[in-house]
Length: 494
Image (cartoon, rainbow, N blue to C red; front, side, top):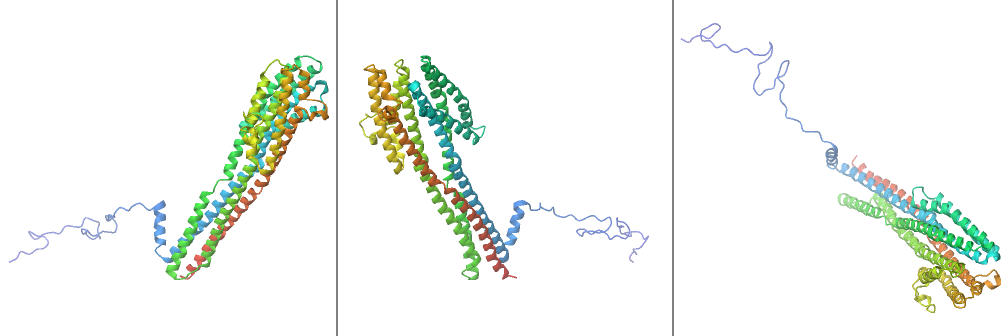
């Protein structure tokens, strides 16, 4: 007989009570339990939420899964590319325009003013020596030329300083010139006063004044000219630089527009999309405008350089050397044979002007600064420089004749009269008359070359600014047209 199993029966198995509070179901392995006091189920650890590029990549992936999403993405890309092309093109053209503006209105005028300062100071020193040789016969014209040279140089120094920053090397040179010019003028006046009194000390003061001019003032003026020429070269280089970034972005934008249109044609069998065609035409017009304007303005600036700025630079060198030769000629007479330094200086400078070739050799075979000025000059200035060279040869012949009178015949007064005179009627037959004719012809050539520069360069800035404005407007128009063209395709999915 089976042993009954029940409460209190021997051997009965009493089930275990649940460990939880009353009213809770027993825990079953593998089954989550809820409710008060239940142990929460374990969850797998969540990965880090996508951020930055990962989130953007995820959104782009979601967007490109549908045709409308792809169209929206294409529209955004084309809008960015077209606007960026217009903005970049406008910025690069505006940068070129600003450089062209500096060439015309700032760096070339400053370069010219620096060269004029150098020339005016050299001319003042030469004229002071001429007036000293004339002594009591010094004419109002000679005296007026000297005073005008100093006044003009002082005005140009002040003008250049007003257009130059204080921390620039050019400003330092201008400051030195401004300080030393009154010192030189004072020495000349002392020499002039002693000379009128017949005191030999006048010649010493004049030679000392000239040493101050050549050793300090003319050197600073030459350094100033070199600084301004370097600035002009930099501005020319920037104004003529090619906007390669704009060209590259233009090609990329046109490629993207063509690719989108080809893709649409393959999927919709519609040959033309007016909006995308309009955007392509706008970008193409901007690129062509950029290319044509870049070529034409570069050609104009190059012409202004070749026919204006570059020949002016060579011509200014020759003009200063002509003045230096005349100064050496005058100071040699002031020295009255006490030194051969000025005769040697004349020989050195004339070799720099015409080369070391004999006087009877044609100018075309010379190697000096006059030949360089002739080679670089435009056609209408070449005749004027040729006239200057012929006058220069006449001047050299008269100088040699006067030098022979002084050194071989001991006729100082005859050499003086052959070199400089207060009689206007006799001046044409002196070395002074040939010198003035040489300097006058070179001055006409400089005026001609300056006109060439201004005529060639003045329109470049306006053309570049117009092209910059057009590129910006065409970029915006291209973006609007592209969005409109793709918007019509999007409307078909609604």
